[in-house]
Length: 364
View 1 (cartoon, one colour):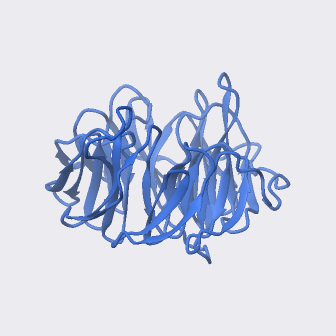
View 2: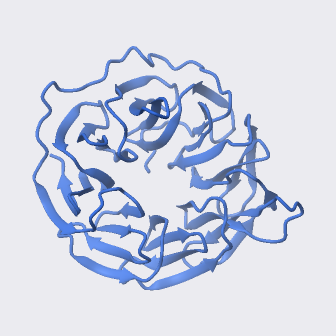
């Protein structure tokens, strides 16, 4: 996700007990919403895609193609303009990341890459089942977690962070073995790989594995959540923003963050409020350097899925309620429609599941 508009390298770190720091204007900006939301644009194309509208599986989009894998062991590439299937590949995928002319995929047993033009396998690295299967890609490098080696503790998991050349799958470097009973997750951004280990956030240069810096975190469950060109996100019970070049803390807030995106020069953070019986979702657009709140969409119901964001639009859906599109820059409600769950977006194009169909809409 793009970090354009960010003037300094920044890291967003969530740490247990990370109390509120200066989040200028955080609550004083009212949510922007039209009393009568404009109707959604017409569906450009639709295709049957199973009976359920839950966004299970893996989804990703680039300028010309939508990629999807819905738990049936097949990755599909659909033409973004028409919805026609360009190719299928017989592999499972829990994560899909377009990277140059490759589609990087990952599941419990392997990390690999497919040719985006043909779907042909390019390379694959087998791995034993690990606690977290997420991957990151940047600067021609793929980073992942692998379960390798023999544990020294009978209750431990021999985990390593590994970096692979995106074009060939050749291993570039591996971290030290880490027997962690919680969640180890790595992301790529700002020219580095970021992960939490032994109550520290570690930043390593993507291509060489050289340690750029480490910074303390509080709690064993701090987890890297996502990264853009200049930022990385970790979550636990609050959020703390740290300079990516130096590891210096910038600001923090007590938010229960479920997802983040760095788009249009803002940090778009989806937060969960309420209790386990009534989980509501609020979304904030925040200046990533200062924590100043630009806009917020208040809770309107239980989220049907993770927010889907681009530099132009943020798409949200509520269980049993509407799907809405908001302007990334201002939080202004652009349009709303009855039902639909967004799964991927690129520019002003959004792809959603509705009524057993996969549909494509272009925002005006």
